[in-house]
Length: 353
Ligand code: ADP
Ligand code: GN1
Ligand code: MG
Image 1 (cartoon, rainbow, N blue to C red):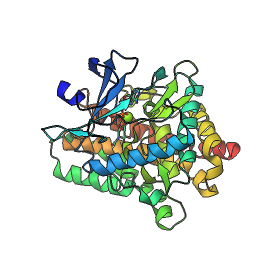
Image 2: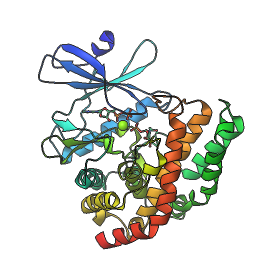
Image 3: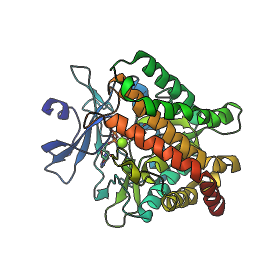
Image 4: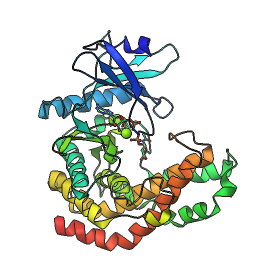
């Protein structure tokens, strides 16, 4: 690790470097130094992200654009260059490392403590979308093709069931049945996109509550982080992924399914924050599709967890065996709850818009 750290232009001498955060993809470390300056060191998951130069170029361009609008170092992610002024370092084993400035006095939440916290994260992601509204969206590389193409995700699930690489398909009959019964929803937003009825925006694509930093003192938005999947996408997907994670009444991998569902007050809080910040940018149809975005992102993410379970847990970090299956169970349960609440979600959006 020392030889990796030595490759970056740091302001102080390193004093500790420990695993940090709860991300499912990268390996993240908090790097403390003897200067009043700490850093986030990340080993970027090169299996998930095979085109690292394009990924880093997207991040550089988007953060440079945000910097023009918000020259406050706590409000935009800041990459720290390597000794030879590169944006990442490739170690002798081919692993990819990068460093960000650590955003000081910030909070990163895995659950909202109250509705206001989620409203603030809605403000953060809505502001992100608003600030990037005039960015030339087609110049960004599609870092993971078909990332939020739900029908394509269903094909991956069916392929995983067919191959049964980990021999687990027999353990998940009810889950398979439940997911296949919901396949009817998969194409609805992609179809509108293909018909040209929904615009492509610069979207974040991974809008979990723990991909936003709040100010520790005021609990108001500071900075949107985890920019690996910034690329062209649908507003409803950014909205929806936040609801999937932040408006859930249980944890992502809650074992007690009776606790699992979607909270309408949390939905409303997020919608209020998001639409306050970017509502004026969205077309009427985009606003109308927000509730379906929530259902679809939940369905899609759940199907990805189930796929990964069948593939032998090769994509998402798993803290314990069976975690992906548990996540798939909570997600299909939330989908069922959202099906029942679609009308109410619609009314909330109409009232706010
Ligand atoms: P992953 O793709 O694995 O989710 P993230 O980029 O989201 O990786 O980083 C994981 C965690 O590290 C975040 O959820 C957050 O807690 C923390 N983190 C990341 N970047 C910063 C930063 N610049 N300042 C403070 N904390 C950060
Ligand atoms: C991953 O990296 P992280 O933990 O913020 C995943 C998202 C999923 C999410 C599920 C690049 O997000 O797509 O929705 O886990 N990121 C990638 O919690 O696949
Ligand atoms: Mg993350």
